[in-house]
Image: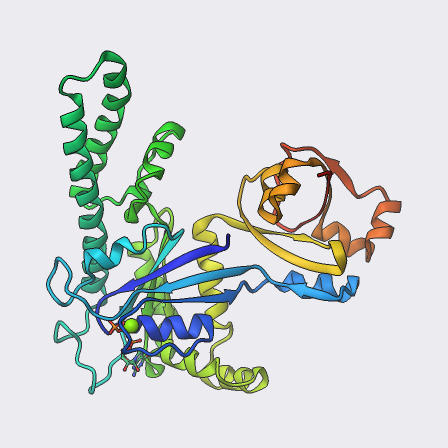
Length: 363
Ligand SMILES: Nc1nc2c(ncn2[C@@H]2O[C@H](COP(=O)(O)OP(=O)(O)OP(=O)(O)O)[C@@H](O)[C@H]2O)c(=O)[nH]1
Ligand SMILES: [Mg+2]
């Protein structure tokens, strides 16, 4: 399963435009059904590996994006994001909030004026109300169950009730769940609820072309307010980036240079979302294929194998591992073998960013 990122934002903030830029798609911005699209995860080390190993195929890791449908009435009126729509995003791994900063006379802002901080607050409020609603309904059910519950049932329901009550109190103080310190048990308890404010959040401020010279300072300024655990801000020129995806790569470079954009906005968005999600890359080279995979930091070799194939996890014997840097120094795997740089690791080895791994398994 690839990582899935949901795109939210107020009406006409440029969600579909950003989605099209990210997925090189051509989704109709007037359509009200959700769009799902795939993007390759930029990973410069993949090309370097391919250059020295000459595989038949080079395969990038993928990330998928979900663009919720166009404008529906939300709890904050018709300017906001609806609760029903938000629940479509409960099984995403992270959220992108597209906030309008571009000016466009022909598309009036729903609030009549541009105000990035107001709009960030409005989206946060919607996410918070969504989670508070889930908690309220669950607490009611727990209360009912507690009446006439046996001592053993009471024992399992009571901690959940206390945890949910705490989360609700924090949400009412506008503290999102992602910022709370929770222990492993609590994290496990709340995982089932798929709370939206528990997900990493990347705020994408959608600027117009004329704002590009101020993009970096605006981004720094906003990050000084909004950069927290698992959340950050990036400025992005949605319309320009969408147009650039329709050109070939030489032309794209030329345009970027002309606009003074040093790094592709798309690459920056993916990189930042990966950082917020705590994701790293590892590589496999079997069957004449060099492949990149994305996993959560702290994943064991056993679970990394399972990401490739469930048989590999079930029949796991060991992993042959070399770091990307060591492999670069050797030039190829045979040489690395000779130098004794290929390590044999067991099930509980924690995979490191850049590891090149061959899994040995039997089925
Ligand atoms: N000038 C300018 N216009 C933009 C930019 N980004 C989006 N737009 C325009 O703003 C309008 C809304 O963009 P969409 O991407 O459809 O916005 P949305 O958030 O998906 O809208 P809904 O799904 O209807 O809520 C479109 O007409 C876009 O062409 C931008 O960076 N600059
Ligand atoms: Mg849209």
